Length: 487
Ligand code: BES
Ligand code: MN
Ligand code: ZN
Image (cartoon, rainbow, N blue to C red; front, side, top):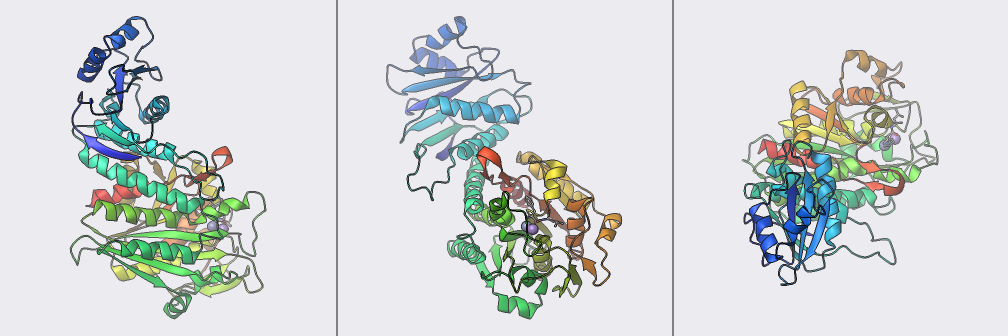
C-alpha cells in the first residue's frame, strides 16, 4: 500500500477507483457533483430513493459504465459533531473493505474532506493512512502457505493543506509495521544479536547514523553488572545497542530514546507460570518501538540529534542464572538486591540510563513493557507516563493526543520510592504489590537524576492478546510526534 498526496479534488478521471465522503446533510461536494454527472445522476437518485443516507457506515459502490474511474464509492460520514477518531477509523477501513480494490489500482480518496467538528484535515489524513496500513498488515513469514497478500495499490489522498502530514504518517505507518514485525518474531529468531544486526543494518542506510554495539566484555569494563546479571542464564549474549542520528547541529543536545529489549522473558529463576508465556517474546517491544522510531526519524530527515539505546538480554533460568537475593553493582555505583529475577526490565534499563549521561541529553525517554500492573491500571488502551519533570510528561501526553496514541501520567514520589528499601543493598528491585508500575518507575528514577527523563510503560498497549494476538506498533506514533515537535 502506497500513499501519495494530492490537492486536486474532483480531478479523478485518471484513477481506477474513487472514495468520496457524503455527510448526513446530503449536500453534494464539487467532487460528488462531478461523480453524479459521470454516473448520469445515479448518486442523487440513490439519495432520493433513500439508499444513500450519508449516515455513518451507510455506503454505496457505483460502477461507472464509462470506465474511468471504474468504481466510485460514496461513504456516509454522518453528522460533523459525531465524527470522532474512533468512528473515523471505522469509516475509513470499512470504506476500504467495500471497495475491494485490485492490485495495481490507483485510488483517489477524498475521505479527509469529511466534515467533522473534532478532527481537522491533517487528523483525518493521519487516521486514514495509519488505519489502512494497519488493516493491511499481516505476518505471514512463518506460514508455509501464506494467505492472500493484500492488494498493492496507490492511494492518492486528497488533502489540500496536509502534504506534511501525509509524509509524517506514511513514515509512521511504515515504522509501526516494522515495530509489529519485530514484536511478532519469535524468541528463537529475534535475539539480542538479531536486534543488534537490525540496528547496524539501519545505520548502514544513512550517512547521518552511526551504530555502536557494546558486547558483554565492554559492558563489564563499564561496570554494567546489573544489566549483565539478567542474561547470565542465557546462551544468547546480551547487547547494548546504540544508534546516533546527527540531523541537527553538531553540538545540539540529543533527544535520547532508551528501549527495553528482553527478547524472551521466562522470569528467570523466579519463573513465570506456563500459561501464555509465549507472549513474553514481546518483551522487546520497547526496543522495537525506539528502533522503528529511528527509522521514521531517518525517513523524515528530522533536523535534530537523536540517540537510541537498546538494553537487550534474554531472561532464562539456568545453573548460572541470577538468583533471588543476589546483589549486583550498577554502572552508577548503586547496589541492587535482586529479590525477584522476573523484575528484570528495570535491571537492564538502569545501566542504559546511566550510559545515557554521556550524551548530555536534552531529554531521555525510556520505553518498556515493564509491569503487569500497568495493564491492571490502564488496560490495553493507554500507555503510562512517569517522569521527573511534570511539564515533560505533559509534552509526551500532548504528543500522544496529537498522534491518537493515548498516554496518561501516573505519579512518582518518595512515599512510593520507600517501598524499594532493602536490608542488604542500596535498593531492592521490587516494591511489593501496591503500585507496581510506580515503584518500577521509582527504581528507574534513581538512575535518571542528571537529566529530564520520562518512562513509558507499554505493557498494555504494545500488543493484543486473544484472537488478534500480536504486536500493535504502539507507541511509535507518540514517539515520532514527540520528535517532530522538537524539530
Ligand atoms: N515483562 C514483564 C511485564 C509484563 C507482564 C509485560 C505481563 C506484559 C505482560 C516484566 O518483566 C515482569 O515480569 N514484571 C513483573 C514485576 C514484578 C515481579 C515486580 C510483573 O509485572 O509481574
Ligand atoms: Mn519479567
Ligand atoms: Zn520483562
